[in-house]
Image (cartoon, rainbow, N blue to C red; front, side, top):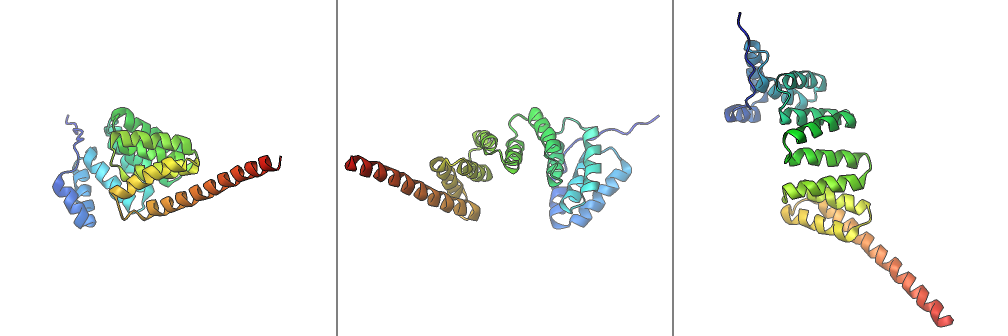
Length: 211
């Protein structure tokens, strides 16, 4: 009796390069691999990613779930399933996979970043900011985390701190249009807050002088 061995290695550099230049050929290649070994993890994962990028969510879910069944400790598969759940606005399902990825790879900055994004989508700026800070502790030059942390702090009206991280994002990526727009918004809000504070101060002084 023969058994089909599980294979969990990542796609080779040659296959990744082929996917970048000719996705159709890459899909055909992995389909041929699966025809020989239907349980091969790298083929299931690679095909799932191809279908995900093409918008075939149902097909991608099927393949990635099969891959995860064969390799339940693969953090990258958990992360890709999380992305699919987010695409369907199933944030609870996404969090299950992102936290699983983090348990497997405690220093997985990308999964922590994705968790922060989900908190942002849900309108919890405080929880989002906490996640983005953790990302930056792991990877200080993670530009999207700098930007998102700045936005989360802006939403909490913590303008001075928000400006620090938005400027950091622009230092790392000078062409980051969203960070530049957010920084402009923060500067405007800071100016409005300063004018309001000045008005209160003058009102207090005027009242004291009349007394």
